[in-house]
Image (spheres, rainbow, N blue to C red):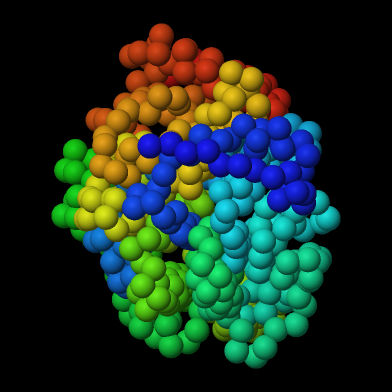
Length: 520
């Protein structure tokens, strides 16, 4: 059954005129399940590894995310852009980021919150934005009715305007159009983002208005900061070291069905250091675990509110990460001698723990390998999504806009013949309803010279340090160990040519076309 949505020009007077012509054409609506538009919550972790949460094989206590998995669906093959900024650009626009002149999300792109507003949703951002904090690029300029959080990249969890790098200005933390520079003594970012989200959910429920909430946590991105009581829960848990943790996770992942026994565990990354077992090495992972744990506790607060207000059954929830665990290893403290994990310290888990957090995959954030761009993705929508289910469908962040537009009653394919600013992604609603289907179009990635493309089960990756492409068959080699570029030269050439065409269309700057034929 279909119905028309009437859009009054005055109702979108604050939106850019450049996309009014498109919005007027988004008029074919899919009636939501049960006739009532669902609330939509997209929860995004920051620099979290593929196997960090319990329902994907991790030892970290994440009962609330695990509950979402038990009551919903898990993706085995969901992708991001391997970097904070480009991932958020795709999530907000439904398109690959603009990598030429101008912003990652140009002004003429229709954003996800702008689309949700057309469908009558209240749009809320709680947490990290990272797409600009100057006039014209604030969340409210791009479609959010309400925004609170870190509009910058990363910051102290205890006092976001503390310096976090030598000779670096203060990070930008704000509420709508107002910058915030002072914080209470008991401030902790993960809790604060949730406090704001809960307040906005209550307002939307009281107003009887469906809402789109983007709850974008900064956990567990460095700096490693967590409340002492959460860190204490993991004291001694990582005494066996990063390789022992990797082996344990690998075994649990097979048992849970995240992967099967055909998936080989690669050798430790070459950057992995010798394990000495000292307290400092252990404490890094203890704090990382505490940050993920605290994020899960706060997700539990959201679920509790939905249960108490009787709105859980009509709320679609996604949980995923913006990229894989990071191998970055800053060692700057803004307070000399600050204990790691406390205000004033500025440390990260480094490549050895990050390799284990990304079990079973190779590489890290910013890489085109699975460890950089494959994320756990958990989705719950009672009565629509099959409980405790898995899907092998390939999904990507660019799919959020067409999927959620469809859920909200808008047709993302309207005016496709005219080619006006339409999403690059695909509608995953049939997948969420339990239909397995092949992806129609390839997915692409690039960051600082690292590159990737996946088409069906075939994937090419380019690691800038190696300076050549590789070809993998993920149906037989999920952890990208066996380069088949010399075995399948025609497919290899076809895919690298496709990547080149995509790079040109999105403005990716290439100093030089990398070698397409490996020399061995």
